[in-house]
Amino acid sequence: MASVSSSTLIIFIASILVAASVAGTMTNGVQRLSGALGDRSVDVSEQIRTDVELISDPGSPSSIYDSSDDTITLLVKNTGSKTLPARPGTFDILVNGRYVSPSNVNVTVIGGGQWQTGDVARVTLERDLSADDHRIVVTVNGDEELLEFRTS
Image 1: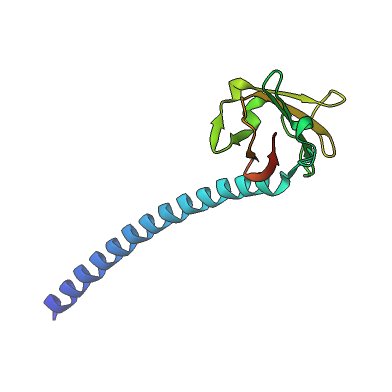
Image 2: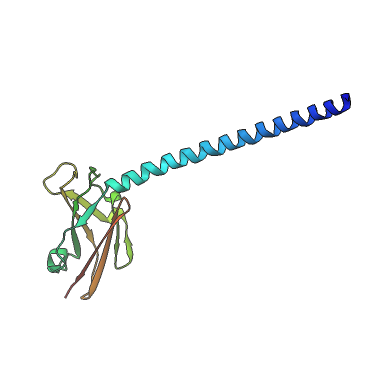
C-alpha cells in the first residue's frame, strides 16, 4: 500500500513541476505578445492620425515643374489630426518610380511655423523631367498620395 501512495505522490509532484514550467513559459509568451501589440497600436494610432493631401494642380503642370531650373514643387496639405514635422525626412517621395533622397528635398510651411492641421507645406526637389506623363508618389507616416501630370 505504501508503494502505491509513494509512486502516486512522485507522479503528482512531477505533474505539478511540469505544470509550473508550462505556466511560466506561457506567461512569458503572453507578456511578449502584449508588449508587441502595445507597440503596434502606437504605430497604428500615428498612421490613423496622419493624413495629407497633394493639392498641387495637375491641370497646371507649369506650377509643378519648372523646366528652367529642373525643380518640382509640390503643395502638401496636412488634413490629419496631428502636427507633423516639416522636414525632408518626413516624406518618402518617388518620381516616376525613382526614390528621391531626403537630402535632395526642401520643405517649408507656407506662412511659417509648424505643419499643423490645415497648413500647407511646400516641398521642392530637383529633378530633370522630359516632356511626358509623370507620376509622383508622396508617403507620410504610411499615408500615400499620388499626383499624375504631363509636361510639354
